[in-house]
Length: 223
Image (cartoon, one colour):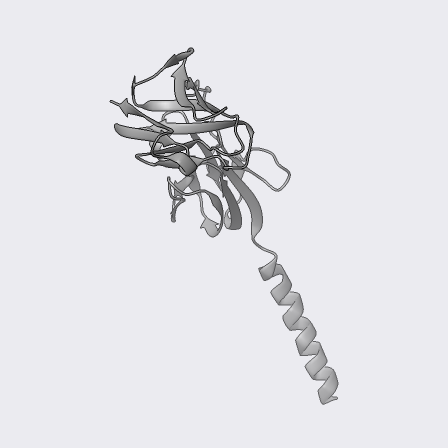
């Protein structure tokens, strides 16, 4: 008899515990690599409205100059602007409005949703993303390295967002860009064409080939 009572108690405990464990719904936040930010439900649809409750949010931050910042009643969570990677948050959402933004580019990169007894807000009119300026970075063949715009070498640039097409044409050289907030490079043994989205800030940026940095080098001043 005692064994049956213990088994019944255990069954009741599991029955009560399973809904509690399964109560957290899954959401996914994504920011980058371009000027995009979104929050999706488990079916992959954009989230306009949710029921109050506990949610597990997996945030994929795939940019080193964006972040994902969620705020609203009882919630204020953010990834770091200069970091990238995946983080998992467990949050409790209550009645009200919530927003998610990229803090450095909040005018163009933002979204929102409502929770509980709040009328869903109309979808905002999309804003054009910030304009990216195209640059071309070339290393090789031989001991050559350059940074150009429109086919001309650049010595000065305005601060802003740039799309850099990196053409690595040597298996003994690489292209390494160093400056405020940036430290990116191609592999020495790698060849190919790569695309970087970077934010250039005020200061001096150097570009070198690491194996021959004393003579295969250049710089650009950003104002």
